[in-house]
Image (cartoon, rainbow, N blue to C red; front, side, top):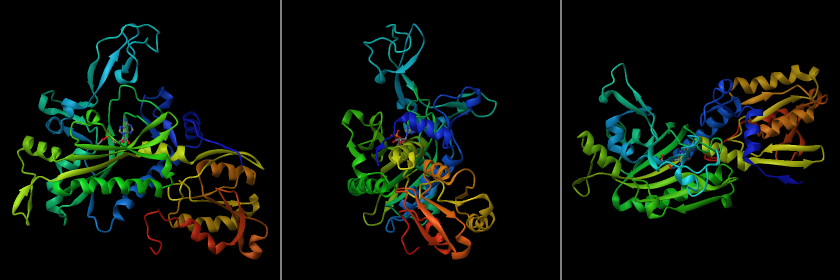
Length: 442
Ligand code: GAP
């Protein structure tokens, strides 16, 4: 079977054609760097988030609790975190056509890619946070910012979580939520967006254990990607050089993936020291230290952070799963998504319309139990298989004229297109998809 791999253009087209991702407000011309998830995309994003949560919960000897923080944060909070001062990109403008670029994205000795002239402004720092005003007042104290990372909601709630939950150092607080960055040049589809979702886990521990946990979480995150279907050879761990480190980090590794536009960051794993809690303690006047019974002294916990964008992982999984193949029945596009990530777990296909009624009863039984399944009765059976291949449905069940007599259906496997007959009662085992982090006996 000849096959060819994904390009960004092919993924963008598939996403629109099959309802994964749409340009936001497209009928009004769209917003640069802002996207909406369609019906398939919504299901797949939920599956990604579930897999991430389960990967943390399945760490049986690690206490990890969850938080859902607000997206608006006060000016004081972002001052303390260092984002007001440090969270910027170098911006340069073409004086001839007013086009704006990230200075580190272009060659300033060359000409403007938009108008062809060479007339650059000085490079200036551009803060990436979206600022807004709370209420009708325009005083400084009513300024607020949309969070550029979810992590700070975790740090400012550290004491609340510690005193309200039965957790002790070391433990983790995890969060999935929206983040907003006014990127100078959003690009590569959903790789660099202005509104996106992050999945972040902050692991609080002693200074003495932090480097061991940093090594531990690096390894766990590698395992995570392999478990959800990314080939280990496509994942690379790259340590940041000293001059690349963020303002808060004493050590960071990027988990990188081979995107069609180059090897780029998928996730950041950072040893943040105790920078964040120390800053929030100093700026808020609240003591964020914990008491160490063994040492008989207080200390400010250190933090190891794992942070990945839902949307960036979504793009990665589509690229990884996408293939175009020549088959005996003609060309096909297939998404070989891990079954737990696939938006639709199975399609129920009556061979012809008049067989719909008995098979729809079987299908409805699965829908009633909340399974993500589709009833697909329109078009030739070959066309229906192709349609399901394109959205990554792992199994199609076909009900034919013999089914009523022998109580069997044909199962058609997405990955190798193999077909075999199985009892209708055996469908359960295929539809009941378990994530890679759920023990087989659950
Ligand atoms: N709290 C640490 C932090 O936010 P980051 O490296 O700036 O670190 C973490 O972001 C992850 O969030 C990235 O590895 C990426 O997956 C995702 N991410 C960051 N900026 C993004 C953007 N503009 N669009 C989509 N995803 C983004």
